[in-house]
Image 1 (cartoon, rainbow, N blue to C red):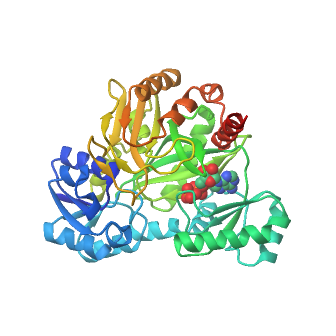
Image 2: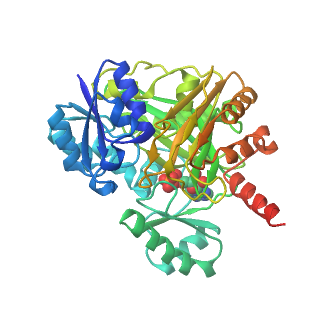
Image 3: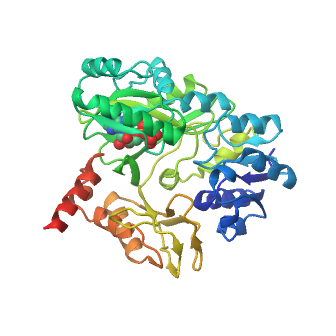
Length: 452
Ligand code: ADP
């Protein structure tokens, strides 16, 4: 039984969780840093507790303060959202020792997937195809060169503890290995406190395809249809859609089955996402698994008519998955991540929202913590709103999204809406003809045109 949930997060995801918890008749507690005192999640939870200064390491990452907030408010469960503490296995361990239910997978599963190289090797054992690469952490230059020679250039160096598209370096020839290895180690240490790297073959023009997994504590594990996340900038997702225009029914069935079998073999519990690269020959390779709710989970909710957070809460309370035999997908859904940033230089744009009109109407969902008069603090990521469209066909979903974004007005800060409108009207995008190189190529061409 869960009766009161503390949400250890901020922004749109905190609000998203509070919304479902309230619908379920549960009490909610928000935690906030001093600069988030006037944030929507702080105002819309039943109770709120200040947990420290703006700096995340002293507030949203501060486990003792968050646990104290739960104890003071008598919250019996904690939802970590995504980012911050969501994939830190110490957090569920501490929750457990304090008799607080952690709404997420058990600590050992988080630990396993948190080491991306170990996860890769484990999934290989579970018969998921993995990208050819190193079997272990790569430290020395000679070692890196000999592995790269074996798998063939180009290769990609990736941080074992990486995430958020950071700590990755593509190496195109042996001459560049020395330099790229040092930079990647330095970046990994700076961003994740761990310089360990592993190596994979770099797959050009691939598709980033991911599968949503939901597992309960009674042994039911279901894998749902794919999210296409190939519209990326600097390895970070910008727009996602489901189903993927690139994946046919045969391949879909194959990836879902392989994921479900692998998830069953490790006893997956709670929400999780298995990420794959799919090459031009439609071969799929496991990349990593994220043991939390993803930013882009709403598109899956839209086409399956399910509330994934509700399932996650029920599973944490020991209840059975409400769809133990799977679900039927219908229609097409697209999500645009609206960031507070310059659409082409990508420089974050914090500040006061002077005027705000968010889109709505049939088939449009907006997950956002923005409101008119709110001053966006510069201390956190720049995600301002997720605009999600659903329609019977891909074509209609694109039109619906275009209309929604054209009718959105945000004054006072810059956003990347112009970039989204450019993507949505691009002829290759409209044909569904795009890979992970699409946005970088598009931006390079655009920059060249504006120089002329
Ligand atoms: P993170 O956890 O930081 O998001 P991922 O392993 O999920 O890192 O990779 C993020 C993105 O980086 C992928 O979606 C893809 O665009 C690119 N990438 C990662 N590995 C490869 C690879 N072996 N070949 C080509 N691109 C890759």
